[in-house]
Amino acid sequence: MLSFLTKRFLYALLVLWGVVSLVFFLFNILPGDPAKMMTGQRSDISTIESIRKELGLDRSKGMQYLKYLNDLSPISFHNFKDPESYFYLDTLNYNSKKLFNTSSSSVVVLKSPYLRRSYQSKKQVSEIIKETLPNTFILAFVSIIFATIIGIFFGIIAAIKKDSLFDRVSLLFSTLGMSLPSFFAAILIGWIFAFILGDLTGLNLTGNLYEIDDFGEGIHLQLKNLILPAFTLGIRPLAIVIQLSRNSMLDVLSQDYIRTAKAKGLSFSRIIWKHALKNSLNPVITAVSGWFASLMAGVVFIEYIFGWKGLGYVIVDSLNKYDFPVIMGCVLTISIVFIIINTLVDILYSFLDPRIRLSN
Picture 1 (cartoon, one colour):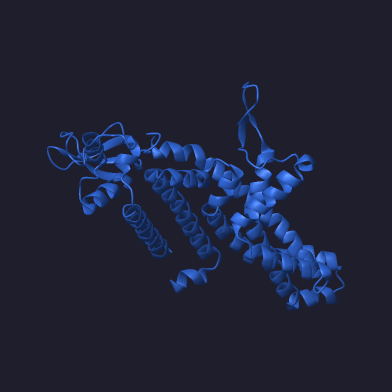
Picture 2 (cartoon, rainbow, N blue to C red; picture 1 turned 135 degrees about the vertical axis):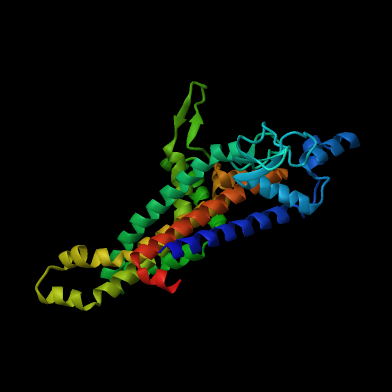
């Protein structure tokens, strides 16, 4: 078991290093000068050069990459005596704790990852993520709960009423739900329920979880703003859960122990709820655990269209402003969440099915 956990941990670190490297080199080959973006078009050359030196853009790509890895690492090396050093320990950026000295001027510290500062607001990227990540998590969580409950219910009914009109309609919905692009679904659902039927539904096209009232008297919780983005984000996992629930239930109903229960004279409802349901949920729970991580990464267009102030909204807004540190920080955060959830799911599988450990 220890060997399996070690392999999964090392694999997660390797994937994370690959993501960090890809994000760094991708955003460092894009056109545009960050120094000019920060100062505007009327800035003089000396100001631009000063900012480029402050950001380390005057160094080689290799040195910038090492500095980026050093900033992200929770254990990092720094120079604490020379402010002109490229790896100087700036207390304004690093909330660190000294571990030990490596030389008279170098030190190893324990710190939280430093994701740089926004080019536009000059705010630390970590603070922006702390403000928006909870909104994305709430949206993804509500979406997966909605998809799981409704999907299992409809899937079971479709299995019980196999080849009926309800079964055919559910299969059609599942096919459309899995093939419908998220951004198109968001536009379509917003147009129907917020514009055409807005007077009946009372729903807004855009809005956040908390809003300031028109009189500026305070911030109020607006749960209705969660309905449309959560429903839209949950369509695809809902379609998959319906299919999985239906197919799994049909497979369970064909087992010998179900036929034995029927032969004993048990009622059909008792067979379904007492014997078949529990055994049919295993593949559904497996899919749901993986889909939650995917939803965290798939909220970009939905959040932007519905004005939901989460990581996805920030990513699109930062792309429009060429605010690369914010984009890189948000992408890395989503990647880390994805890696952590999938690693935990792999470990959970190993406990549920020891064959997975043996095969690794």
